Image (cartoon, rainbow, N blue to C red; front, top):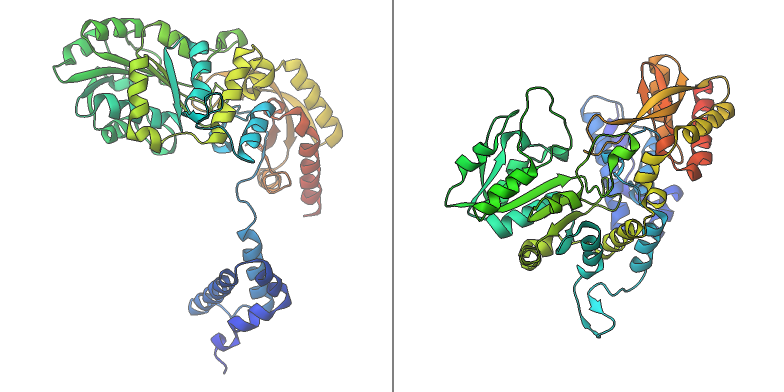
Length: 458
C-alpha cells in the first residue's frame, strides 16, 4: 500500500501549476516557495494526525488562497451599525472629510513637518497643533504624542521619576488592552502612593500622605466606569489648593479630550480640558480620538515650563506623532476654532443627530428591505471610555429570526463588501443609523440585501 505522504505533490509541481505560476511573476519568488513548502508541511502534519492525504486540487486551492490573502489588506474600512459612537474595536473616532484630506495631502509627498518655510530653517513638529490647543483650552503651552497613556508616561518620567505621586485608590483604573494606571506609573520610575479607599477618598487622605519625596498629586477621571452610592472624592479645585500650598504639581487626566458641553445633548457632564486648566491643574492629559473626535493622539496642555521639559525628554521622541496624525489633529482642532465641530466632526455630528432624522433613515431602510424588517426604539451608546452608561435615544432597524439564523446573518454582514458590523439582541439583528454616515446608506443596504438573499438560499 502506497504511503499517503507519497501522494503529496512536490514543491516544483505546485510552483509550475498555472494557478500558482503567475504569483511567481508578481511576488518575490522565495515567498511563493516558502508558502508552498508551508502548505505541504501542513498536509504532512494532517497525515501524521491520522487524516487522509489531501487532494491535489485542495492543496492548490489553499495555496492560492494564502498567496492572495498575503497582499489583501487585513485592515479595512467597515460600516459601524452597532450604535456605539466611539467604538474602540472599530477604530474609535472617525475623522472629518477635511481631516482625511489633510492626512492625504501631507502623506503623498514632502511636507514642512519640521521646517519653517518663512525662515528657511529647522523647526519642530509641535508648532502645528500647539497654538490651536492653547487657543481652545487657555493653556500656556501644549504638545501631542501618540496616545494618552504615552502622555501620562512622558509626564511622570520627566517630572516625577524617583519620587512619589499620590493618587486615590478609586482612580487606579484599567484602560484598554489590560493596561493599568499603576503599571504605567511604575514604568515611569515614579513611586505610586495610594490613598483613601475604593469608594471614598478625602482631601485629608492626600494631605496625610505628602512627604518630602512627593512630586505631584494625580487625578485620573474614571471615564470608563461609574461608581455610585456611598462615594466621596475631593474636587479638582481642592486638590489644586493643597498641591500648590505644598509646592507640588497637580496633574489631571480627564481622558476623553472633551471640548464641548455634553449636557446640551441630554448627556451627563463630562469634564473639559479648559475646565481642568481653569481649576488650576498644572498639566492636563487626554486622548485625541475620543470626544475630541480626531486621530489617535495624547494631548498635553498646561504650564509652559513643564511642557518645554516634556518636549526635551527622550520619551517625547519615542512617542511622537507622525505627519499624518498631526495634519488630522490640526484640522480637527480647526473645526472647533471655526465653531463647526457639530457639523464637521463625525463624533459630534452623531451625538447631535436628531432622532427624527434617524427615524426617517431607518424607515427608508425598512421599506427597502421589506417585510422582514421593522423600526423600533433603541439607545445609542457614546462608548470609547467616555460618559459610561450614558446613551442617546435612537431608532433601530430590527430583523428578527431564530438565534442561529440571526447570528449567521450578522456573520454574513461582517464578511460582506463593505463589511457591516451590527449587534444582536434577543434573536434580533439591530442596525443603528446614528453611527452610519448617510453616504454609506446605499452600501449598507447592498450588503444587507446580499446577506439576506444568501440567508434564504442557505
